[in-house]
Picture 1 (cartoon, rainbow, N blue to C red):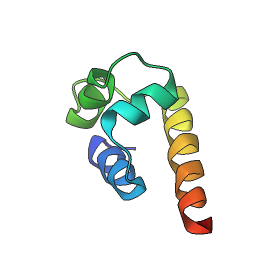
Picture 2: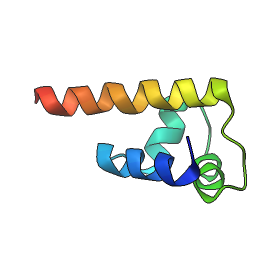
Picture 3: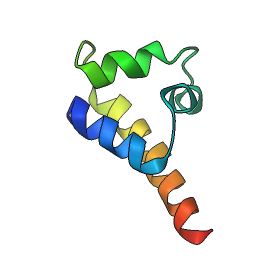
Picture 4: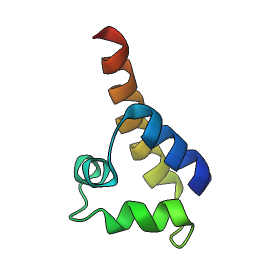
Length: 64
């Protein structure tokens, strides 16, 4: 997952950086900002968590 892919997935889900950070267990949106800017590496474990949160949210929107 590239930083740009993360940003696109988050925006498609309608989620703010703050909300995504909270759902992933981070205290501040700065973590998501660093990931989306490429200043922090998206490791495989983090990627799994991000995809789980964003795909779960996306499925919820489709059902509504």
